[in-house]
Image 1 (cartoon, helix red, strand yellow):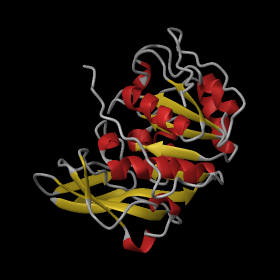
Image 2 (image 1 turned 135 degrees about the vertical axis):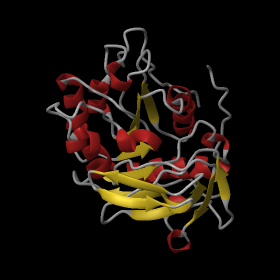
Image 3 (image 1 turned 90 degrees about the horizontal axis):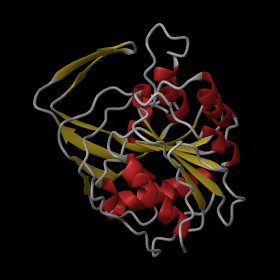
Length: 284
C-alpha cells in the first residue's frame, strides 16, 4: 500500500486531507528539526499508511523553532480534517492564526500523540501574552512539562503491571535500549505509565524551576511512555522516545505504532503482525 502523505511544498502549506479510509485521517505535525523528525516522521507516516490510516505530514520548509524562518508553522489548518494527530514539536512561537488552528484541534478533544520534545513545544518570551503555553502544552495536553534529560543511552523495559495494556501488545519482559537520553518527567494525576527507562549523568544535579526544586541523581529511572485523558478530554498517548535511531529498535517502533492506534481508538496490530522499522540515514 503506497503512502499518500501530503508533504508541503516550498510555501510550507499542507493540502486538506481526503476523506479517511479504514482507520481514519492521521495528521503528523513536525514543528522542529531537533532529533530530526523532519526525516523520521515521513517514514513513520508511511508505515501507518500501510497499516490502514490515511496519513498527512505537515512539514514546513526550514526549522520552525522560535520562528527562525519567519513563517512559523504553516499548514495547521489541515488539522480541521484530522481524526487523530501526532505532534513532534519544540520551542515554537506561533502567531495568533497558526496557534488558533492548533488550539481549536486541542479543544475539540480529538485524540493526540506527543513525541519526545513535544513536552516543551513552545518558547514564547516571558512577557508574551501566550507565554503560558510554554509549560501548559506539556502539562495540560500531554501530561508533563519538560525538566531535564540524562546523558547516556536509555535502558528500557515495560512495566509489569501494565503488561496487558493494548499498547504493549507484542512487547515482552526483555529489556531494550534507546540510543536517546532519558527525559525526567513530572506526570499529572491520572497518567497511566507503561514503559520506564534508566539513564545516567556524570554528577548529581540540583534542578530548580517554577514548579519546585529536586535532585537529579547520577542514575535515574523514570517513566518514558504513558497514556492520559487530558484537560480537554482527549485520549492521549505520549512518550519521550523519538530519538532518530529509536525507529530502528523493534520494541520502540511497535510501542509508537501501537500507541498511535490506541489513541485513535482503533485496534492495535496483533503481536504476530509485522511492524516495519527503519534506519534513518541522517542528512547533515
